[in-house]
Structures are given as C-alpha cells and as structure tokens.
Image 1 (tube, rainbow, N blue to C red):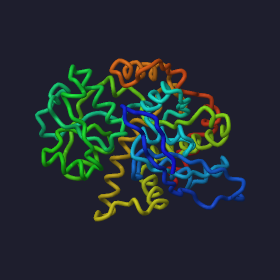
Image 2: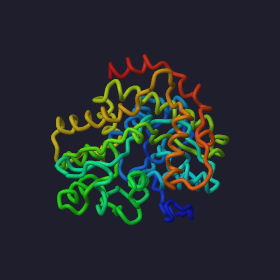
Image 3: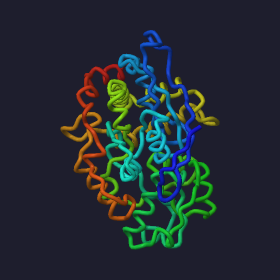
Length: 358
C-alpha cells in the first residue's frame, strides 16, 4: 500500500487503492488484452458509471484490446493522487485537483472531457431560508469527503460572495446521500456542496433540494478522463481505446437509459438498491441518467472527448482568483486532444441503433 505526500488544501492526500474487477472473459487470449486501471471518484459505483459497463458488455473495450478494472476512491483528489503515483492508469476525475497538482510539478492531463458542464454546486433543502451565498455565513456545509471537489466549490463561492472561507463557513463531512439527508433534517448541516445526481439521491432519502443557481460555475467542465503524460507515451493505444469505449457507452446510455441501467446492474449486481421495487429503481435511474445526459451532451461542432481550451482557461483563472490554484497553470498544458481521431473512430448512428434495439 503506497501513500503520497501531495498536498491539497494543505492536507496530505492519503488514499489506498482497492481494485474492483469490472471485466468479463475476453474474446481473445488473455495475454493479448491489456488491463487499464481506472479510478472512479466516489466510494460506491452507481448508474452514472453506465458508459463503462456498456462498453464492457457490448465488447467495445475488448475490440480495442483492453479490459478495465475500476478503482472506487473517495473523491477526485484521491483519484488524481493515485494517478500521479502510478497506482492507477487514469481516472474519471474533476479538473480542479489536476490544476493543483500541476503546480507541484505533476504532469497530469485531461485526455477526454466527459462531463461537459459542471455537475457540482451548492444546494439547500427546499424549505430553507438560504437564498444566496451570503446567507451561508455561520453555516455548516456538508461534503462527501474532504477530498471532494465540493470542498473547492464551497470555499470558492464563499470567497466570491465576500465571506472568509476559513472562518465564515464550516465545511464538514456529511457522508453519503442518506446520511446527508439525515443531517439536513436535524439541522446539523444547512447546505450541501456535492453534485447533481447526489442531490437526487438526497431527495430519494426524503429531503427535497433546491440548487443555489450560479451560471458561472455551470459553464465549467467537470469530471473527465485524466492520466499522466508518461502514460500517454507508454499506453497511448490503451487510453484511446478506453476513451473510445466510454464515448460509445455514453451514446448508448443517452439513447436508451433503461437498457443502460439494466446493463449496469447485470455487471454490478451488488450495487442494485435494496428495499425498493423494480419500477421505483427504474424511475430513479431514469431521472439520474437524464441529469447526467445533460452534461454528457455535445455542443454543436464538438467531437466526443474534445476539450475546449478557452473554457478550461476560464475555470483555471477562476480557481486562481480565489487561491485554490496557487501558481501558474495554463489550460493548454493540462488538456490534450491528441486521441480525438481514435476516440471518434465509430459511427454514432450505429451505436444509437444498437441501443434502440437492445
């Protein structure tokens, strides 16, 4: 078990990786299939990982000569740390810790922008008196873990509102959605700094949520496939194959979310919600995947996985403005579009047809 001394908000990023086998028996000899370890930046898998499950089920990873092992980790900072130390090959991580670690000399890069709009932001119970960031003074804000991007967002928006993020708010770990819902009901936390589909799960636990709207944050990119530059050089074909499979799985999931949910539970039966009838689970998953499709969808003229340097640069400058990134970072140094041709080497219409007929 290895640990890193990289710092994130002054806190050492100590996280051990645990491999979870997400592969099926390959059609080719095992020796011909290269294993790629991918970090999934929450402690438990859910239906939002469907593009990976679909690519596995449909044999698209196998076609590219790879099999994927998923590594669940508490947050994007842990994912970035594990990529940086080489314990995993890549991760579906948020860009903020990538920018932070680049200032420390770690050559991490986004090679596939997956969530093209930000999934993070603050939310409060529907009945809360909190309307703006200024109303958060003296309040506790719950995050899933102290390595979550939710910490960055909470501190940044507090500073943006003229609050001192070190003294005017208190960021605490509220845990998984059910626990967060309980803490909101008891008043132990007043707001959450998590992400869109987590808020749906909090609502499922009985606490209707209301987002604090922020158009600036909404325009920023979110979780994407990231890897070290050295891994680009050593495993370029494998990374491109993973990204291509993810893109195809995304097209499938948008076209047929019901099948996406079914495939996810077929490959990962242990994550199926218990105590709920199948129709309720399906309704929850359809709402979750609809929310995710909103940030997966391509802008006009863009290709799957394409990273827009102007949008990333605006985000980097925003992070620098509030002291989250301390040091010089250029968006063009933290993103790469070099695999775009390989990633988009498929016919989306054929994938949609496959999804529709599934």
